[in-house]
Amino acid sequence: MRFSHSLIAWILIGLIAGWLAGKVTRGAGFGCLADLSLGLIGALLGGWIFSKLGIFGGGFLFSLAAATVGAVVLVAIARLFAGNK
Image 1 (cartoon, rainbow, N blue to C red):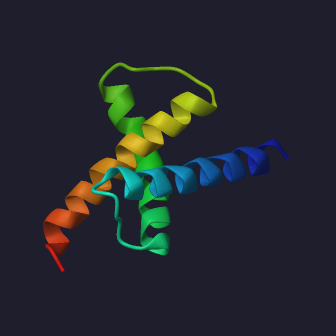
Image 2 (spheres, rainbow, N blue to C red):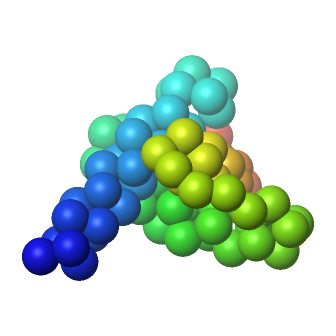
């Protein structure tokens, strides 16, 4: 039961981070579904980036910050490959 709650929390944080990344990066992302997907993957990437930088913490705000950083990095990389449309 605890695993399902943590999985739901991880998914919600990733979705919020994707939405924030879409807003932070020039005000427009790749669309709702793509931004949310990037947020979910960015949650993993952000956690890895924070751990490599020696930044550790816990709680909702820390997790959201890490996920948002990861999502913004992913959106920036995706824009390099997608180019301007």
